[in-house]
Image (tube, rainbow, N blue to C red):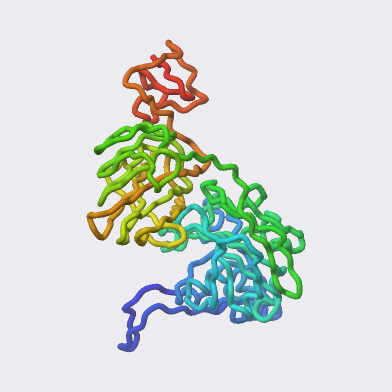
Length: 460
């Protein structure tokens, strides 16, 4: 057993966390017969002292009280792995435990399409991390081979662990894997089995060579958000794991705003109807192109000017636009998003600069790209400049928005009155989402004019 308590004293000596352990092996019913029992090896001591270091239990600590979890079993010293070879050869720490304790040598991120290589963890001390679309939920990939402390593992190959640290309390209260419907430290078994088997690793005895959003198990988050990546062609040769990472093929929609349909303006303007949204211009105007911009129209933005979109109906994945600095001095460009109608703004990082502010030198032009991790329908975005001097000429054109698949807001009514009502009386609203005229989702009991599938309907 172990203690987390501090301030303990014995013989006038103070000490902190400690572990004390010994276990008998064999059968409890024959504990009084030495020939049927034996003193365990160091496994229990290793497990309990790991608590002193700061690790939690990874087995189901309340057992069947809330249902039995499919915990990591003997793949993990903090689960059942302390008992291997009569506890004389407990399994080594996995990559997550090494990372948590601060002695994992290399943890590289999977963030591009290429072939990746993993050497055996117990000799290379290396692993890979694959982030998800949920903050603090990610996957750890490691290569486990049956040698040294891992020689009594049930198999060999690439293990994939899901780490979910979104709920702090389950970790601090040592209930990491007590919920069988949501383990917070989960071994992703290649064949989706239970217990411990040679088919758990990839490719393993099950010869599983791919994992993606559609496989079972998959790379989706607990909440069902899909990964941007496919892991394929997983092979093992001479104890080395290799695999390919490809971008998940998702058909994405996009829109482009060339400003060609907008009239020329001479002062600040609001609500200018563009291709996919309305535009507000502060210290900015729509002008005819004269060497800067493309086509016949371009946005000229003066010092500290802003170009702001209305609410974008679909969740945004990325935004690109072209920016010209026709002055002699440099200017700084900012791109920000707002999810509360423009009350607060969050500056976003430009992809190539990896910074929220981009300096554009005088007499030059750039194409800027902003990749957004996750946005809600109804997000606004804003482009702003902060030049060094007041005598500036900055231009914006060709704004392209790429959307993530997902729920979207109903289309805005460009007019000021009700253009058409498609139905009256009771409405079958069970199958579709309902919105009021402000674009807010409402429940079926809402009475009045609502929008269903893009059509205005009287619900009463």
